[in-house]
Length: 286
Length: 293
Image 1 (tube, rainbow over the protein chains, first blue to last red):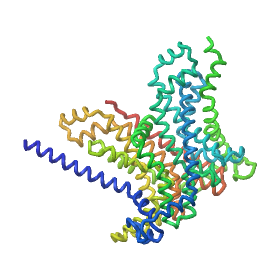
Image 2 (cartoon, each protein chain N blue to C red):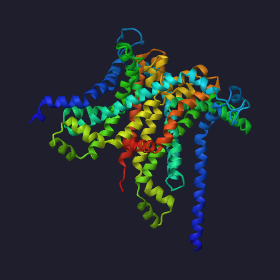
Image 3 (spheres, chains in turn blue, purple):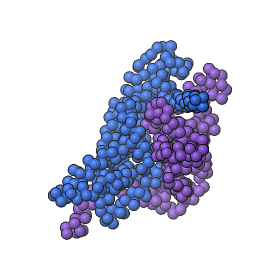
Image 4 (cartoon, each protein chain N blue to C red):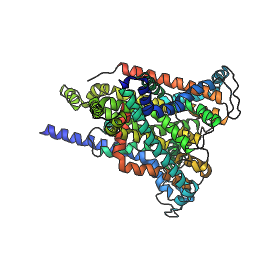
């Protein structure tokens, strides 16, 4: 009995230590966020005086937010980001799932070639493509400074990864018999795809949607190269431009940073489980 | 059969993959090939003409001391960051699979930095390093904290590494957690019945079986660290005195600030080749010794 008691006690102690380590690490992890949150409600002077104080000597103020919203064109850039992210994500999913379907179900040479090119292209980092991209589409075709160009580029860049994931999903989890049954019942290939295959791909659709939407929402380099006019800015570019002008006005900066983080944090609060699952399964498959 | 005719095949292909093929080629394949061509020209970004200069850009690349410095810096940064990210992530995953209370909450919490783009994260940390840590150092009278780390050469590098570890550890933790969960509990128990302590069982049973998680995390962190740009731009902007310019930022500046598009593209290609060699070698070595349960 004594042995058991000792073991139980030992377990309790390790449990306590683990918990303490985790809590300390967790606090260290969220420390930057806490700093931004408490300082967003202070005046510039109060932040310089004591950035660690919970509330500044001028009290709890909200004017930073209204000012920052106006100065970084928050409404416009938020709408831009939302529009670009949503449209790019939807089309990436639709196009890549269709492509994966035709690649998996046919042994044509064109399909094999496309798929190998896509796989190979996944190792190319964006930095290798950005200079020719700008000189081609800016210098020769002159189609930069347009949201549509950015959307098409987002889709083009994310197609290979998404096709690869749908390829795996169709290959392993959609039985060929289902499609044959539909074909015998008189469906065309097109109908079979939309009525049978696509609805069965839901889990992969969710994964791809989460990974790509997050990548599009947070992307900075590509949008900054494509969108040169203020009214087209997405949130990351707007934040960067704002910081460039107002970096000394710390209260405003903190409010702007909080505003830039808020949409995705709120979304995370509701979709946390799906996002964690989606990212994990996406990473493990990729 | 109608389904064997060329016309049917072409129609089907275009219907399902036509748009994708066009977009993919226009955005990835065409720029890649055009980029190779650009490395043999000297283009300033404005003029219509792109004079052919042969290998001059590659020679310029090999003579560009700042580029090699940036590449070496990126290498040092990557080695330290990759090791630290994976150590922290593995440690977190280990703690968070031990069946502790609230482990889902912690997992979700540690992942939060990954939700936010590098630009915003960089500015957040800039404030923390410049103001919060300095204030903390002054109130606790810790000398090392009382001036901003971002103001010194080594400090700026340390800051970049800290932010990268903070940013990626949560993501890699999720992969390691998945790895831990994929190793069945019965194997651990069997090892413990055979007389292993829990630490021994983890070291000799769980970790070898998680090899693919390691390979994957290392690949992801290596490629990301090599190509770091957003955080570099917002956190240090290359300061102080260009001592924290990473390779990707150097390439960007070479092309878009100094208008040497050809040389910039040649340097980007060299960077890509170095990164690909490191990444592929790592995966090759990692996969070779993989064991199955």
